[in-house]
Length: 139
Image (cartoon, rainbow, N blue to C red; front, side, top):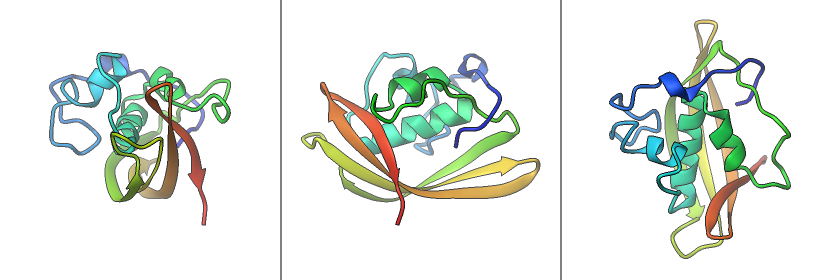
């Protein structure tokens, strides 16, 4: 999902529907995690909040929730790429009492006016009580 360029989350209106697809407002949903008012309780919640971070351009959150062994030194996002919809296809563990989990998803976007889709299975681990993104698993 990462590309060149940057966008900032500061301009995303908290009363708009959250990009993660929960149906809640951004301010009551993923915005709470982005503002550090809460942490993800499950791997799926972290996946949703990371998708929303891509959608609103919050690179600081993306880096903060990336495992230190796989995290890039910096991250920039393509301003021409707009993440529009997230579909969670499956989850594997990643619950309240787990230490690892996986989420398979489709992330839809528009780039230069054309639709696109990323299909991925992501692995997450709980480190010091916090869920973090570890890596994408390819089949």
